[in-house]
Image (cartoon, rainbow, N blue to C red; front, side, top):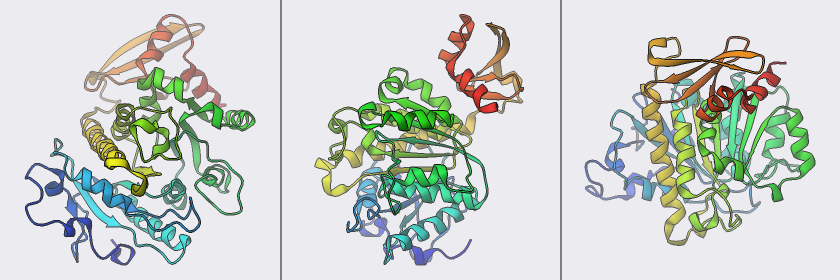
Length: 377
């Protein structure tokens, strides 16, 4: 591992705390923090990286201490997941320019990826999602991407911002986004023609109401994803008071925790970022508390991931033969986690939900089946 200390602030959050601040079972005593020359994540499963860069959202925005506001709440939580090893690398140093900060974040995320660890980024503005993606792009790895956001950030701007980063991620060449899923957009903030265009690209978009109606159907979406970017503006204002530019509608706090738990459960996912939080706007630290709980649930999901059987271990699954319309297929249900998979005509098993199985067993074609078939053409 290259020496990354130059990319980080000199003092770690934990160094501002007196010895004995945290009890033995709190995360503050169980997370391995990078302090001084102690910059080693060899034993970690998950590596936390803070980046308070906000100039992608507001041109002259000050570098935010928001990641530490989240740590303030996260470290107080009790550790129920002793089998999961977490390291906290600290905060990326503010660069002289926005590009400098982005380059430093990318270099760190590349090292984490090459080490086979899961990167957990606490942002910062949503455009930092591009640094998550660029790790896979530089490795020339085709990936599936998921984002939770009340907006679809496809504005056309001269520079990359938090409102335009998706345009670069989805259209730049060469491109390594094999599939993209957008969770929780609010229709009145989305241009209809834009959605039509993206639908023709066979990307999936889940309106807020649809996602909330069957939140469990988002689990297969995240199970298929290699990276997940979560903008807290997708949480309703009453549950996240820091969302001063958000909406009275959105996911509830517990739904946000469910989504991050689903992400943690994904065997494919190796990069997770939470963006859009500004501690300066956070009434009574409620948004920081919620983000800390979302991270706790991500770790809880990761523990489930470690217990799941491989699909080739058929004795660990219940098999269902189902006929619908002119198709005969197989559904698998895990005995360990109760998750579902369905077999496509090409023989590949893809993640699905119990609702997909119910539809198929009634003779109807699940929409997920049709979308997967379209992408094979």
